[in-house]
Image 1 (cartoon, rainbow, N blue to C red):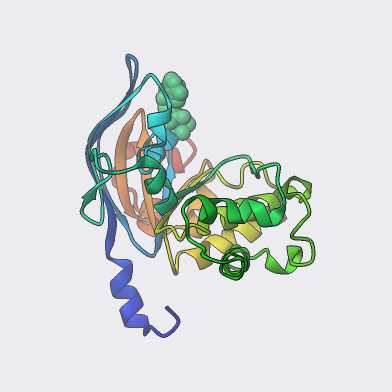
Image 2 (cartoon, helix red, strand yellow):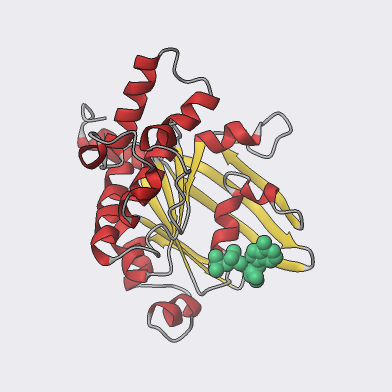
Amino acid sequence: MNDMTKIERDVRMTDTKITARDVNVFYGDTHAIKDVNVDIADKSVTAFIGPSGCGKSTFLRCLNRMNDTIDVCRVTGHIKMDDQDINDKSIDPVQLRAQVGMVFQKPNPFPKSIYDNVAYGPKIHGLARTKADMDNIVEASLRRAAIWNEVKDRLDAPGTGLSGGQQQRLCIARAVATAPEVLLMDEPCSALDPIATAQIEELIDELRQQFSVVIVTHSMQQAARVSQKTAFFHLGNLVEFNDTDQIFTNPQDPRTESYITGRIG
Ligand code: ADP
């Protein structure tokens, strides 16, 4: 990636990684997502914003089929990643979730060592042939998540003993360890203090060099700081999707304007 010229990077930024068409989501009778169409760019950060309950997390969970795990949830429409329909019968959802990693609101390391938290995914997906291979994956993942220097001398210590911000970076290391192409983040900073939040935001900006990142956030300031594209959801509709600076400086829909100026939500 570092060998690429700026022009090559800019061209790649416009590549589409995920295409969603006519996506609807129902929880029993609740129609939570209504006819959503969106293209998610590669090597770029896309933010989902909107008032609580508007469907941001629900739509995010469509992108790695996490909604499959909710009994009452039904998803219709088409979602393609690199032209492959992710809901096709041939797709193994466990494999898909290795390709489309996820980081949650509350850091949730396994009750295992720091090393084993990161090694878990590569182990179940058979990504390391030898102990040395695994050591390399663990180190590279912890480096990518900007936490290697803080934990390299205590890889055998429990992940749950780290601070909240460190735990969240450990969870990011765990997500990147399976060599995903997309990283989904569902309010990844909402349980963190301002310093840990700033570290994660800086990390997100680095991660976009390698991944397509999609972040749900209730913070408009955070969306403005970290994302290149922003999608505004309201009552299950994707009201507006555009370059982040356009959404915040020149919104086209009155509902977007009301939200960003603090009149709704
Ligand atoms: P947001 O992330 O924007 O706060 P959600 O995606 O969590 O919104 O919720 C969208 C709608 O779907 C809400 O009406 C919410 O109550 C409903 N919902 C979310 N999760 C579930 C669930 N597991 N079961 C039933 N309804 C749900």
